[in-house]
Length: 207
Image (cartoon, rainbow, N blue to C red):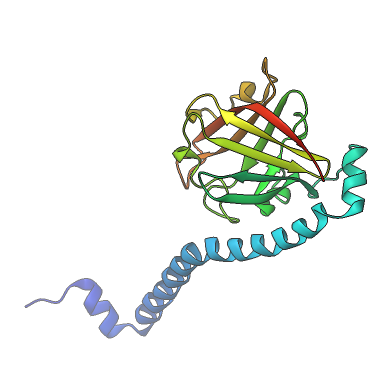
């Protein structure tokens, strides 16, 4: 039986065997990277969240929030979504470095619990994936935001919906106090945006 050209090349040419070995190593490392990257980003995000939890309880952050001088990457609010078990600190800003915390506030939108549309972007598959299961929310579910000065509750007035990444209309102020959450869709792709919007229900004063 005739041997294939590939088998013959591997048998007679040492450089071919070395090349195949190199390709195998590259493919293995690439596979490990794809599997390991989300894990390492989640570990990193956990460390960042530990720092942010301490910061949001500090007198310095409370004063900065009162003066509306919270810096990019600093703690801004804590978001809780009871249906999904989400409990994470949201930072100011949506730059790549800020979003390594998991979720960030669009600075051009209203502050949490203020009048207007509070918009927050979050990761869906990496950096703790706080918005990983936003598609499971339904009309009537609640979103809670806690700040150094108080907290508030919003309730979904419609099911999550999908829009284009260029659709900035979802960040515009609405007729009511509201919160908008944005994340990539589908999971692992930035082709679309998954949007969750909820309207204000009540405020609670900080202790």
